[in-house]
Length: 293
Ligand SMILES: [Zn+2]
Image (cartoon, rainbow, N blue to C red):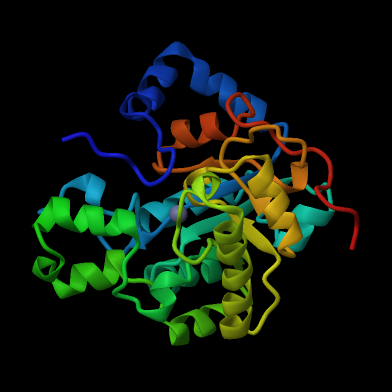
């Protein structure tokens, strides 16, 4: 059955890419290029405690705790971990780590590793499953139907580790950490360009207000669900009070602070990482995105 990934994932052939690249010498080229330093926003999703051998791989988070730690260990000597303010307001080289969707595993599995590496994470949280952590996002429900037929057939420990949203209390706990900043990923994770302007404003404004209230911090950034946006969506983000918004692939609609590219990372493989951060596929940011604060 054809299945649409919730975000613009790498094509299956890209998992072969590191091996091919290594053979062709492209990986060596990428490693040489990135050694000159760059400046990137990186996009992760959930991170599970472990691999679940009886569950199809594509129904699990892309990274386990060990794979995520390996990824940060590869990054650490090459790219300084940037704080959001540094990423937005300075030209310092390095990487900004961002995490989409707001799963409970952000608190349990990701935050301890960020603390280990003294790296700040920018967490884009969807409000829907903060109000009820079992009110899973649409694509998560689709995973559940595909893998188990019905949501109630999913083992409790797997659901908690992989699919549940952050509860209000868990979001507050995450936000209180010095290693976390909270951004919005809308109320319901919709395809924003398809919404009426009233529905669009509601998704952007109400999520910002709700997340600021629970996290007790200003919510200044947005990540577009599925990376989808157009000029009206970017303008609505600006009008809704966001200072910046993150895409995956920039569309060039003329509002650079509202279409910040992010390299989406799905594998811990060093050759894959070198290619993603070479500037060959994603442009490195050079200038500050916003004026100095
Ligand atoms: Zn998402």
